[in-house]
Length: 447
Image (cartoon, rainbow, N blue to C red; front, side, top):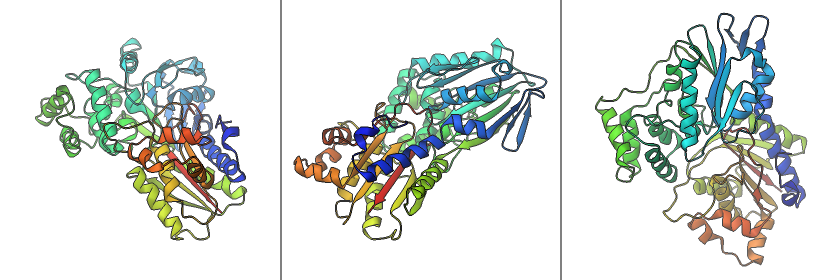
């Protein structure tokens, strides 16, 4: 069972159905499922196949590197496809190291704020090249997923980990889109923005990617450690200027970016002839699995979009407005995927974008004439807070606010959705670390 507190949450038929639909979506994008369907290996010819591409390891060795929230389970699943004796060595970085691998070491590090464990792990990962004298006949499998930007941290020369941490906190609270955040991250790193892939040249680097980014932009997912970077130091500097952060980030950050703009620091690579890339799972896969499950439960289902983005509350109110205006007449199940953003005040409360989406929907859906339910869930199991995946609310939750004489607006105003939902009860969804990450999924069920 993916949702750990399902018994607590399943208080109505509609809720039971919603939880089953959400679990179907997350289960479809677990690496144990995806890796076995996307990757093949022939021990006899020592050939790796991904989609319609084949990579021969007959003259060299196979190594595994990478990072992200799904990297641990991807490494575990890979060893079910490739015999461990055919893997020379490997190291991937994840939020947890509780995975069963024999050749690819899984190292835990900090997320969403990077930590010293991540730095040490990346240094060890880079050390594989010298330790094993990795060369042109060798093949590296890079297991990449969302979350890799924080987990694979290795500050560039001239900037410290503490300065990167401070800049990360400011960027995540600024309301900047993930592509903008990662533009800055790439130019403060030794491995992001294609530098990891370039470092292991001339070996062929084959990236297997689980995407949590709207539009599957390979340069943005985990800050594109093996993909050519289209952004520049000037772009990174402009992001800080756009969000009023130039005077707030540590001096070392602006100094590195200015030096880069003036040509004193080498740009991120714009071409990587040794790198290959395969997206093996994304948000759309989860949405389609949810759609199929909802249909089997008797719902008329419509996938509204798999590219949801923008301010969390604005998006939640917009979708509620469309429902109240009967835009989706004929459908009683609406499914949405993507990732919204929050711009937090200085004294923000506890919560995450999915909890804020659900809390906002309490008021946005209050004029719906029948039964309704809204669930907003992070497929990785962590909605900023590590022990909460998201939330589920319905017309009964709204009635509970009235019975308890709770005024919702102040909680929304101070971005304290977790406190509100915990007080109401039967709303916070707990999955633990799912071992995958393809962004967020939102489900509306209507009667």
